[in-house]
Image 1 (cartoon, one colour):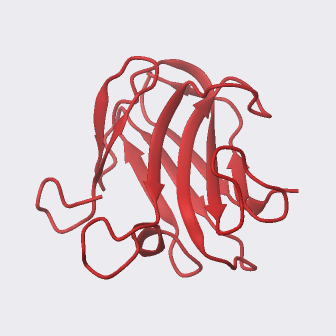
Image 2: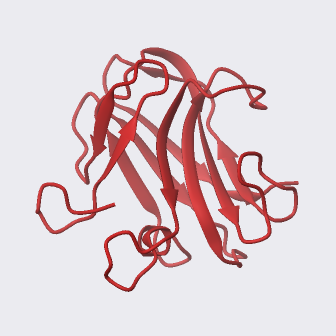
Length: 154
């Protein structure tokens, strides 16, 4: 995460796993984008290790995601003394991602996983990590919006 376009907000670079295309997540909401709002519950506690946002064909996710939209380790990548995920998501702040072109079109679930200290790295751990998934939404034909309310993995 860094301010790639020097407009005063944090941006990050992602890669579509299906097409290998790079894309920038910018803090604007263009018409042909996926806009995902991610929220933590009021009971949210613990130390975040990573935020992962993907596209999936089915829920529960049973294989490789269609695309990894964002994978953000909770480290101080930009050297400002603040952990990256903690700056953009928490009890006081929902995260709104607008991703202009994810490199795929069709109907998919948007899945968010918030990995916590003591939890998983690739698969969320029940009772430790947080997760949310949308209903299937259509990508590639205008703006699509989802709200993902994270809950602790049962």
